[in-house]
Amino acid sequence: RWLNFKLMHKIDNVGFSLLGKIPGITAKSWYLCKEIINRCIVLFPVIYNCCPKVPCINFFGTYAEEQSCPKCHEERYQPSGSPRKTFTYIPLRPRLHAIFGQVELARRLQEYPSEVMRKCSDEPGSVMDFWNGDLVKRLRLDGFFETRTEIALA
Image (cartoon, rainbow, N blue to C red; front, side, top):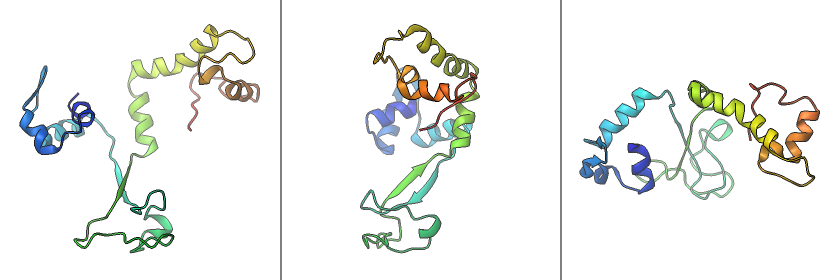
């Protein structure tokens, strides 16, 4: 709830610390909140430098050592040495572990597609959700989504 409140209201770290309380939760500081959140989850974001003129490139892989964007020639770093723009990425495997590690959420995610398909009519053009759309129907005919444990990534 702390993180959600901070992000929803676009409160900076100092402002968040000055709030002191969120209904039902005492928040002493943003640093303390981050420490508690980090102990509860195993998602560690990876921060990449990217071109300030988005969308252009991220400075990793082939471009990891570049000092300016090879496409638009924008400088990678500010004069202070810090990146002009960054991109935060949470790797897929820990995200999947976090989602499917929660028993109730995993159960809901596994049951949802079959519930949607069961509730929907078979009228042509009738779409209630992605799971009863034409693409999934075609994929099911090709043998995909035959078990409850299969997932699709988009």
